[in-house]
Structure formats: structure tokens, C-alpha cells
Amino acid sequence: MRSVELHRRVVADLIAPRPPEPLPLADALGLVLAGDVEAPLSLPGFDNSAMDGYAVVADDIASATMENTVRLPVAEDIPAGRTDRLILKPGTAHRIMTGAPVPSGATAVVPVEATDGGVDTVAIRAAAKPGQHIRRAGEDVTAGTTVLRAGQVVTPAALGLAAALGLAELTVVPRQRVLVMSTGSELVAPGTPLQPGQIYESNAVMLAAAVRDAGGHVVAAPMTGDDVDAFRNTLSRYATEADLIITTGGVSAGAYEVVKDALGGEVDFVKVAMQPGMPQGAGRIGDTPIITLPGNPVSALVSFEVFIRSPLRAAMGVAQPDRPRRQAVLNEDLTSPKGKRQFRRGVLDPATDTVVSYGPPASHHLRWLASANCLLEIDEEVAELTAGSQVTVWDLSAG
Image 1 (cartoon, rainbow, N blue to C red):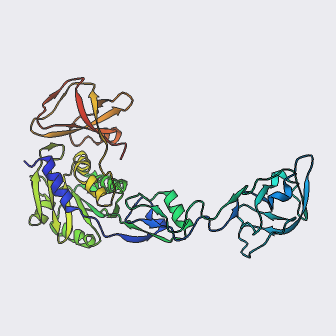
Image 2: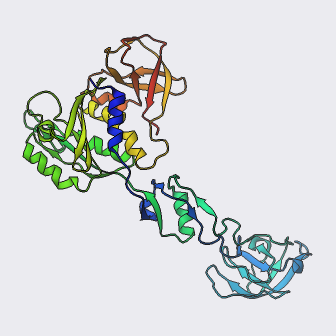
């Protein structure tokens, strides 16, 4: 059987990044910048008021106190957005709003709370230091400064900065476009009445969600029966839109294995020394990589975690694509099939770094995986673990 490490390398070698592309800001959230971003202008772009109040010459109100107010005529009213250039004459004040341009000649802004709020004349009750409540041009960003770095994830704050700099697009590493296909004549869509022998399709829903959770874009998530022509037709319909194809089911050793029957010349079907998830496949349909996963739901999702999630994220430029792994103390005795690497569902207590397995190990027990927060990775050479042993844990709640 193929080792877990070898199959990881095979899968990782198939998944390649797309060329960087400029995207509108609204579409760039969560993606990774493909290059540095330099500021095309300064922020603020002009001296502006940090307060609602009055622009003044600080020396004109040096003697102002609560008991000894200084009265000045209000020569102008400056709302935010006013674009004409104004000059403040000594001995006058301009009423000014937050964000509005400070007139030439003004050396301070007095908050409205320190005045009587007058419109024609204003009584000022406090002195001001030169520069008080004035945001200077370029004090946040100077034009030409590198403000965002290649490899940085685009966050809401980064989008806000880009927009403030007048940038309509950011050049990013695009999302991987993934086609997810589930197979099986027994499958019906949730919400459809079940006939005897039928089950609700869950793998495509689950794996499509896993792709999105990893940061990818799901092209489609159709299901097909155990018919080679129908499978091939569905594959052809969507494959040209995808950077990666993931199938589930139809790869075991029995009859009616539609994925094996349809792709035997294009996919290398192997057995991997792991539990769950032994039957696997990897190859290309034309230029598009395809990874074939087993049909049992736990096997499918664990296989996605072990083989696909990290290289998928790496192809999108994520600096740390792997789930966090740590050592934890096992709170129970466990057995594991020697010769196979076992991935058991578990519940990790991060406060104590202790872990307990959760549910039976069989690959159809999806309920337990839905409530687990980690996977226990048990090496191929280990057949027994006693309580108190150290075990490797994949933290499914992070990364």
C-alpha cells in the first residue's frame, strides 16, 4: 500500500496556483496579495479638522478662559467636502466641521464644546496650542510608502485602506475553482422522499463546504448515479471551469465503481495505508487535476483534511496552510490497526492539553465527526496506546 506521506506528495504536486489577477475590492476579501501595494497619495491628503469647532489663530485666543471669553467674528462656514481654498485672517474664526480642510493661516481648531457655538460671532472659553485638533497632510500615509505587503491576507482594514487611497482593485492570488462530484445510484437530494434502498446525498454538500472553508470557490457540486456515460457527461459539463476536480465514491474494489470504470486510464487508483480512507486516486483529466476520494462520509472528509486542504490553501498563497498540530495527553486506552495510520475523531481540551477519542472508528459514523474538534493521528507502527500517552492532534477548530 502507498504511504500517507507519498500520497500527500502526489496530491500536492497536482495542485498549482493560478496566475495573480486584479480583482475589485469587494471580491478580494480573504485572498492573499500577490504584490506590494504602494500609496498613490498621502493620507490625509490635506490638513483637516479633527473636531467640530472653529479654526483660529492660536495667538488670538491665548488669553481665553471660562471667565474671560474671547469673541471673534465668524467669517466662513466650512463643512466637510468644501473644495474652495480659504484664508483665515487674524482676528477672525471659521466655523469648521470634522474632516473639513483647515483654511490657510489657521494654527489651531477649538472644539465647539469650548465655545458658545455662535454662527455670526463666537465666544471662545479656552486657549489652544498651535496645531491643536489639526490632522496634518500625510501624517498617516506618505505617497510612495509601501502600505500592504505581498503575502498579506486582505482583511476589512486592508480594504478600507485601499479604498481610502483611491484604489479600485487589488492584485491577489485567485481562489482555486473546484468541482465537487458525488457518485452513487442510491443517492437522492435532501428534501426528496426516500425510496427503499436510497440515502440522502451528503458528501457533495460536506466537501463543497470544506472547499469554501479552505478559501476555495465551488464551481458546482452535482451528483451522478453509477453510470459511466452520465458521469463522463457531467464531468465534461463542468470540468473546463475548474482548477481541481474532487470526486467521492466509486473507487473501491466492488462492482459498479463508476469513477474507476470511467477514469481507469487517467487516474492512478491506489490503496493508502490509513484508516479511514484507504481507497484513493489521483491524476489528470486533460490539464485539470482530479482527486478521487472514498464514498463513506467520514473517509471522504478525513481524506480531504489529510490530502487536499493544505495544498489547496498553499495554491492560494496562504502562508500557513496546515491545520495546527500539537501534542496532547490521551485520557484513555486505545488500539489501532498496525500497518495503517489511523485518524480518530477526538475532543481536545485546550486548557489541559488532554484529548479523548470520540465515537467509533468506523467510516460511516458521521455524527461523531460533526461534534469532534480534532483528529488523533496514530502512527502506522502503533497498535496500542495507554492512558497518559502523548498523541498527535490536528486542531479542526483553527487554521
